[in-house]
Length: 541
Image (cartoon, rainbow, N blue to C red; front, top):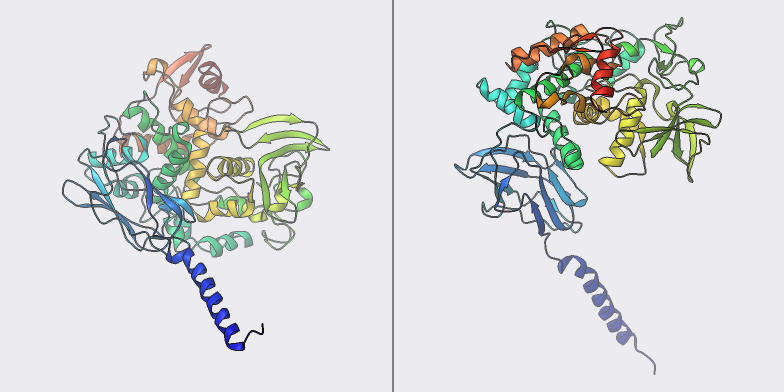
């Protein structure tokens, strides 16, 4: 039968309509995103103070715009307003949104959460309706007898002095107005070419908030959320408030000395530089890198002038030598394997560094080989030379940066490979990441392959949980951070200021004898091996 042109046109229109209807079903027939689970759960009571908030949706959602508001049930006052596009909200592109409050949440009266109806949407542009009813998401917390975690501890110390936590951070602990990130506030673009490059590139509007209170608190909360019970910073069971103050002030004193501007006699002048400016003033050439695996650029003041990021003498004194090897993803110039790296490689043998372990584990490897899809390269070749300078709150350098990189992508973000250059660059641009590096160093990094406890574990050790051990003050933390006692006098000044002036804790030095050697918890002396031996080898056996 001959089909008429009119009949064929009708068939085409019908089929087109059916096709359009089927296509529209994906969006028109899908309901708006719904909540599957909340944490803390709605109407929960007895929640641990200062919880991280999470929302699990029935599908993938993305952050759009709007606020999350935390309110006090007792008087409907606003506790905190969180912009969903800011650093306190994570999870865009997944079905779980994580919220890191900065405000102290520890009232038994209770809290409720409100969410704007423009905050989250799915792939079709359908918005989560939001939460505007106080009964939809509310909870109450326990009243803790001992403040647990930095947020609670700082809030308690601040309250004792009649101020809020952020003001305490910015005025009592540090002089934010005059000192915080002072290099970028008041520095000049003078010195070597590399120093000028850093000033011009990284001293931005954002840099003045690099070491802010918010960045520190969000970093700590993120560590706790992802590491759970494996992360005990200022939360270890059995330690009292004074013990936590000791630990906290050791952390602050170490970071302050590492980043100091030394303008206020080692009191409120900490967290001044964001990177080791001095390392950028002395450079060497690629030919001067050695194969012993250390950060071994020979000290060299180039005859041709100051360091030039585009010239011959461009590597800093922290650049890892040719003995540091990593597995680079084939076809990439930056994507590095996050599972293993190798140090002190000569020929086909060297130390194999297991980056999946925490603390990192090192073992001998007679057959240094990259996995399938990767190739073995020198570590320094995949990172911009000027980034090897020591940066962040504890000035991470060569091997420490690599270990933090591996730890991060095995414990925080699960990735087989990641852009190492971009990761290191975040340490000089993202304050939250910088503090995470410092907290990793404090809680997980160890100095030797014998795997003594990390700094946090040593400082929290008390014989009989009392205060009569020399293993909890600035002497041992200085030794564990540096592998020696350099700048111990400056760290001691900071420590004494933070403990007894800022925190008003009346911390006194503890003395004791070990193998006939008198130990003092405030005195780190050059080559003081006895204190390290006592606090790491003997105490923890």
